[in-house]
Amino acid sequence: LSRMTSLTTLSLSDNDLSGTIPGEEIGGIASLHYLYLDGNHLMGPLPEKLARPEGASLLELWVQGNALSGTVPSSYVRFTGLHDFYIDGNKLTGAVPPAMCGPEVNADFFDAVPPGVERNYCDSIAC
Image 1 (tube, helix red, strand yellow):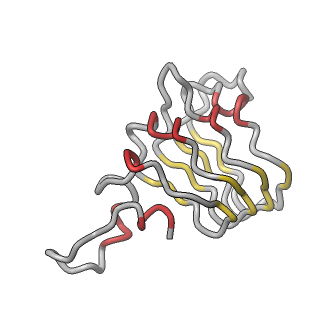
Image 2 (cartoon, rainbow, N blue to C red):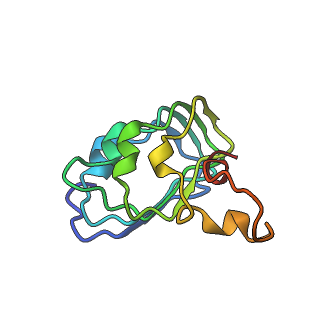
């Protein structure tokens, strides 16, 4: 995968995949902006190496509907342009790193919430 230097989208949703997410390989694709792994049978932790220290480029990360466990790695705050992050339907524990919680992530979560109502932006990620 890391040889695919121009790959911007990797969509493997609903493919009956199992095993763990190969974080080092996928994280090594500097051009990758959209990663869709939702609706599979993936397990284990969210890989810390998805968020490369030299600059993580993911804009969308969909991993909902798997059997992932552990916590959301603190390295994911490096996804500074992330606007869709769906992790529901897994066995994740702990809190989402607070720096990831803001109005720009999963903004559509609050579409039906009237203006002026308090919003917990971490809820839009971890619901």
